[in-house]
Length: 212
Image 1 (cartoon, rainbow, N blue to C red):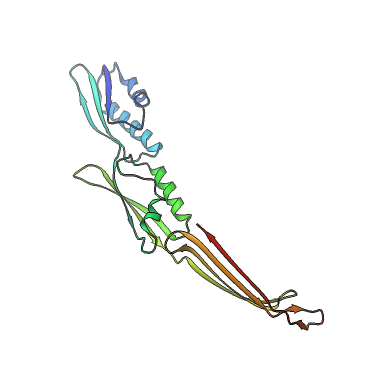
Image 2: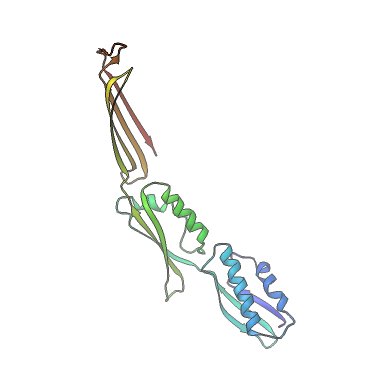
């Protein structure tokens, strides 16, 4: 082996990959040692999150140069399934994967955590399929929407409100836009005196919270 060439690599530097291959220069060609080097290259890609990257072709020249072609795993499309309530643009603003870029599992993991953080979904998974016609990958993000509204009721007694009742409503995906809306209302009969009688001074409290 007199040298190596690499084509198709864009996210990892040429020198980083050649560091794996150069120890083989000056040695007789051996399919086992070359395959071992290829596995190391693919493992390096995988460690950095590029789990779809593969060495797809190996060709040797008469002068002893070995040519390797890398397919790093290009995203053809990103599809979202299961967003029955949430608007498409709300989901996609939390997904940073883009068609035409190299797939990275770390990016997908961060996207899933971001989607779960909206509290609109019980589960988020991803599925990857290669299009045999293009050799590129379709990434499907599967959403399992959950109930985002919650109603709370309460009754009690304290010295400032006397006997009181409260009702609250919370919605974590208001209008399917990922907005958070909270409504709380409390009504009390009046101030509870030390002799257990009540000063008839009704107490009403209301609170509205809204987060974009």
